[in-house]
Length: 346
Image (cartoon, rainbow, N blue to C red; front, side):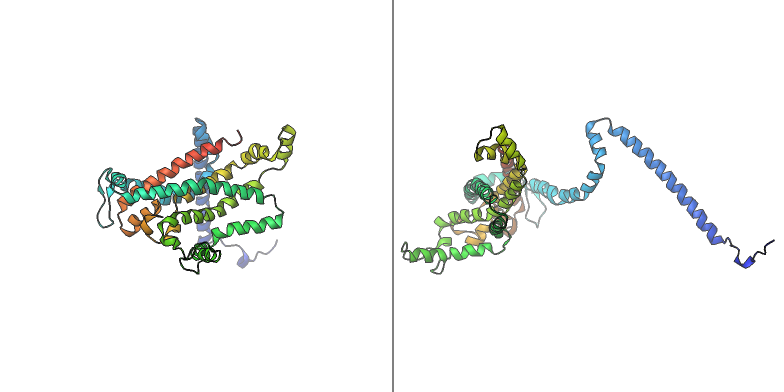
């Protein structure tokens, strides 16, 4: 019979007993929680089968859970400000007193008692109607032509076109070009060519301010739109052109209409939205070029009017009415553009 060393025998202490008891309690609780969770999942799965919408939500619950942080931020910083702006547009609010409801007074004052607002609408419409469609068309034409170039040359020219969009001092180039003295590039060239004798005060003359703003806005809007459309052109499956040739597509114009454009609808729509928002949101360009306010309000836009009442006069109710009208205009134009792009290729 072996001798047992008593000193080396395992000792069950009170601490070990407590740990084992805690472990058993945690296992029991965990098992109970799993049972409860399985039962809830079974009930939710059964509930989700009642309608297609519920079923879709249940099957994609993980994706919706991942979207929650973005949706919360979007709601707090986009939806809530838009709703608050709409409500404040029916009030008088100067940031010092509590908002006071005044009904449609702000909207009536905009159209009946504010001639500068009417001027800003006219200037914004002129800028939008020229730079919107023309900038959109030029972006696509340049993207379509440059997409046919060799890879290295295409990459270089793409950078050249996109550079103005990422350059913070791009507007400074235009202030040098249209400087009002003889050192401005435009005046210097015109004097050297004998077309004028004295320098023209480009940005101090109301006759020239709006055309210059249109040119600069058109130049600035090409960058992002151009890059978006280049990406869309690169994503078109080249085998579709071969299939189109078999089906009777005879020239490049038919390829463009029946193959290229239908495959680019997401990029076309995204570019159109950017073009709309850029055309209606012109304000920083006029301020940088012609000052604020511009001479005789020649370059005054809706955004400039909004900034005047919102950040200078602090009449937030009146500014909210302007912002609401601008928001509604953007939505209407967006719907119109969606219908037009939806007919592409049909």
